[in-house]
Amino acid sequence: MDGMARESTASETTITVTGRSEGPKRTTIETAETEFVVGDASPLEHLLGSLAACINVIGHLVAKERGMVVRGLDVRVEGDIDAARYKGGETDSRAGFGSIRAHVTVDADADADALADWMAEVEERCPVADNLDAGTDVHVEVERT
Image 1 (tube, rainbow, N blue to C red):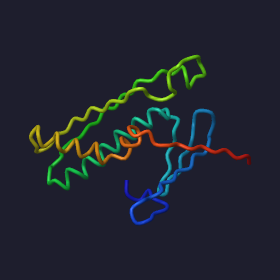
Image 2 (cartoon, rainbow, N blue to C red):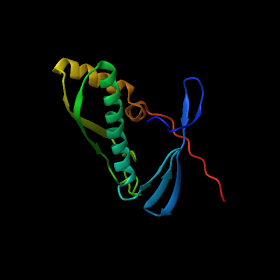
Image 3 (cartoon, rainbow, N blue to C red):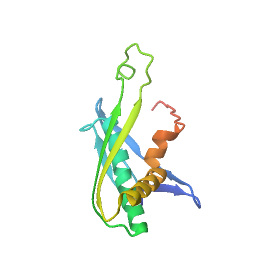
């Protein structure tokens, strides 16, 4: 997660990505250091994948800080969604996931209590989980070219 910032103050960083349409179901995303394509996997799968990746990154960071050896870490993330809203159907459901669950399997030199403490800190420090859980304000503006 290091190196993604474009603008920073002492403690706050603005992370910017730019999406360029390559067609109705394909977008090239440019970041500060790389680019990737959303289209092979859906944007919803990328969102769930972002949570899995963040748990992985923060999990290894917290483990290193605690002196915990992690030999393997797998994260399965699943989300429940009513697709009717984003497909234009009649529904009272929201457009996004109603529920997201992550299941972490870790091979580490730690007992059950240490793993529970480790996971609690990972959850607390994971910015993707925080954004999903805290209802972050999203503002979208449009301009004509």
